[in-house]
Length: 268
Image (cartoon, rainbow, N blue to C red; front, side):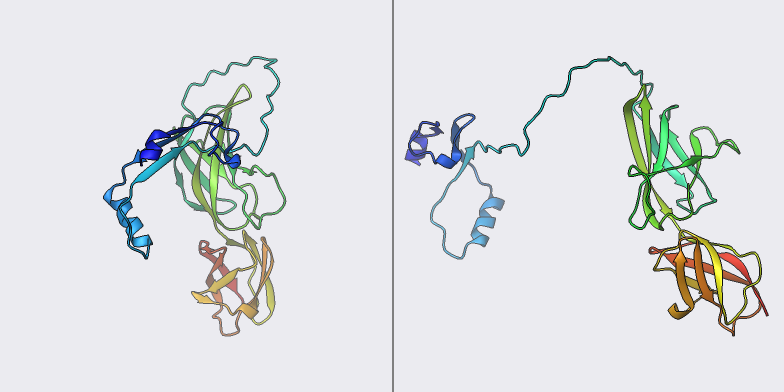
């Protein structure tokens, strides 16, 4: 302790300094560190040998070399001034929180401007598309209530599952704010309009299906051998012969999310 007290500042010229610590931006400073009871208890627990009378010290500084060399950018050539009327957009709620292609999504938001753009984040399983996300479609009619905006999904081949609905606001070409909220994309049966024959493979028109798709007919899960994933918008199924004829409820589950109930006609 006396030696550390007498050599509390170690400069670059000190012979005791390791070459690994050079060059020094500033001298190292060695100061006592008062360890509280919790820190001492952790030390006592970590060691298997009795501890001698000890004291803690703090040594500064730690020099971390940057992995990349800073390169200054070009000077400002054109000055742009953006007048921002708000602190940026804020998404408060989304209704419904689960949607498919064809559903209107009502988003409650604050601070939206004419330069606000809504996108749906990409997820694994999506088709090739923009890296920044899928642009959402703004639905102008019927007019959305004040403080809300009405949106629709851009495509039926988006993979199912939870995603981020993002809004980005720009003014005069400058980013002035962004925000996000959760939205689940769920699979759904959209057709066919005609009756489904029993005992033979038939094609279902779907949106947002995936290769792990499951089909529930009248509340019962079809056997995996009776379900074939063709694409996000087409699933082939075989209706069991024992299924009663007439209108029957059908539900898809894919990407760990289940979609809404649809009704199909089963042929006699």
